[in-house]
Image (cartoon, rainbow, N blue to C red; front, side, top):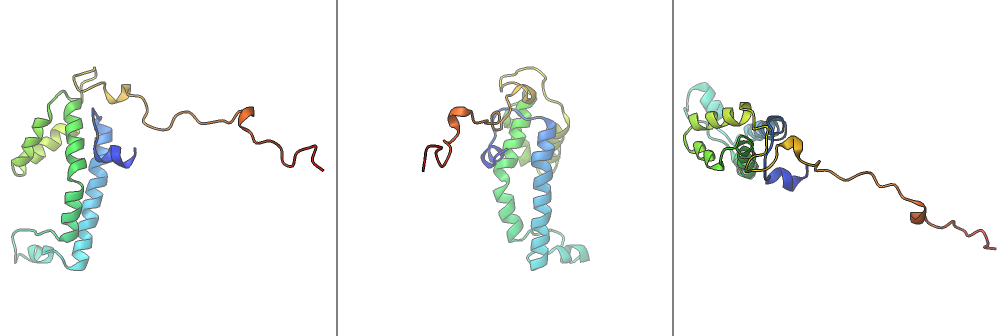
Length: 153
């Protein structure tokens, strides 16, 4: 999967691709960004843990990572919704704090997709592979002539 295809997808993706190509890497990236903010002292996590603050403020690195991964996150959720025959308008559940996001993660992560073709295209298993074609094997016409030539003196 190339970067552009990961960043903005079209059509449908299955639950396995959703978890392994989007949720897991983005969660690891988010944790690493938070740890980087924590190491630079750019977050109030120690105050929250000590009870001196009630709201966790993310640092600069976490904010940049969050904004950079917003498009692939929404794209992956839309493709999962398409796999189930739902419209991407269901993404508006994200506007309901916490509850809507958990419901959307549950719908996208655990509800199986439609096995048949729907209005968003064929299931992921029926798509042609998105990789390079068959391996290129040069034929006799593609080989370079012998060097030095046999009639060379």
